[in-house]
Length: 290
Image (tube, rainbow, N blue to C red; front, side, top):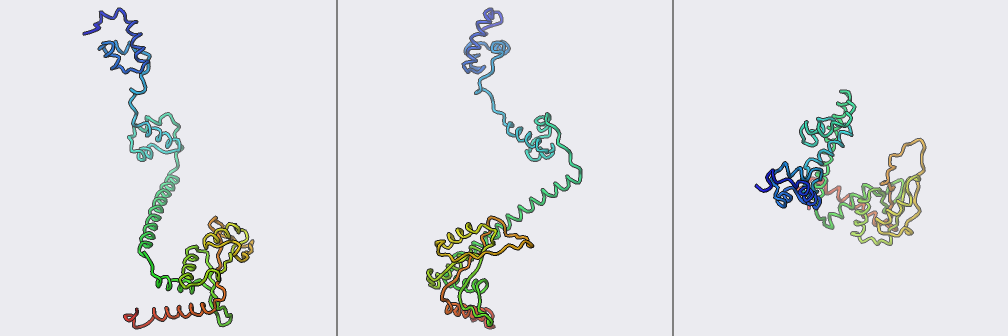
């Protein structure tokens, strides 16, 4: 064998070469082959004190888990929770976090409340997902709609939300008020279907005085694709200090009032259409409906 024990009289010279190779980024295997030193004890003595190059260090697969375990421990998690969350053994968790302070133990009542809250949060998430899926499936069921579909839908929409004539207050004009942008868009599409000219349509915002009035005006103008200058004067609802408003979020934009000028004849036709729908829907000869 090369370099038997009797051949290490020049150990320091050999070590100098080994250190130089180590600092040049060589691995132990490369130094061994270069210097022909096949005794592991001697080889380790030659490079003693010299750190191995980075490329020879094997990555530690559990470093991320260790960091996450310490993070959770600092948040007050118990060993059981960390073990369940990360899928690690109890011994690994203990080794990783044993230098950290123990979390304050909750009394059984607080622990029960925490567990119940976690279960309820999970249940709410499940319900929200089911709700979303139901709505998405229902949306897909509608598909395309015909002009007649839109015609019938618009009549029903107006009779539910539009202004109506009363024997004690003649209001034979078409006026629609709503806060739902979807309903506003549907109503305008219906007017287009009826070939109502847009220059006969006027707009006005109704909103609480403490809301973002200018923001609401911009929003509705953008939605109906009309110039803000064409809008009528905004109607402000005065604040009653004795009431507590619930419509205070950023999404509150009041209502939009849409009025069709010189629309008495159109209103009469809408009323007639509505009674026609009711009569057809309640007819006794259901099999003869078309």
